[in-house]
Length: 243
Ligand code: GLP
Image 1 (tube, rainbow, N blue to C red):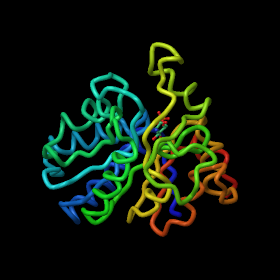
Image 2 (cartoon, helix red, strand yellow):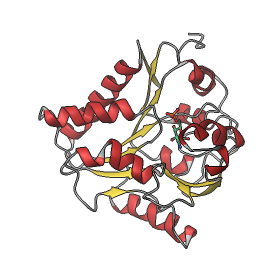
Image 3 (tube, protein in one colour):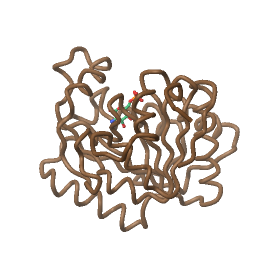
Image 4 (cartoon, rainbow, N blue to C red):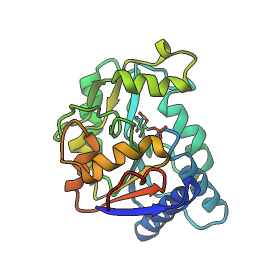
């Protein structure tokens, strides 16, 4: 695991955007795995600005998002479909048909998940996967207890995740209790992984993921086994690391 500790949120965003731009320059047809949540918003803004300055071109990339609430309409202002379009896709020159997001209204959930896995496989896998981390150590919506070999599936959200994410909804009971999520096994097949974490709220999850034993109680600890995984964290998120 590579650990990059920088000063603050803005520096995390800059560093993450730099690595994504470098990836696209090396391989213009890169397949990117994308994350939602408040953490990557700054990264997406930095990428949008880089396009304006002609430092990057997204016209050949393909993306796969990690997860989506279930059930949820894509037009709902808290769907991850809506989030991705508002924060990134509307501002960059990614082509139609190249943005893959799990359908939060899928009638046949198992088929939806199988098709998603098949699409990732068909394109040759994810070159660079961006991740955030939940306060409880979840990645995507793989909550504590998720198997390290799990694949894309329907999951129940933890009470603590519903509580944490209720800040975006009008009330806690409006947060969907379930989600479709890439599995930990799916995420681990990405060729490169970048995990972003900022603020002291994430410090415990960051410490356990990096320095704790590998355990399904801390889903992000699976990343210790990945051969090309970089954590980009600010000083507050790094504050509980021993080394
Ligand atoms: C959600 C997403 C995760 C994300 C996490 C942290 O639960 N499913 O992919 O990493 O939130 O969000 P934030 O960046 O807002 O702290």
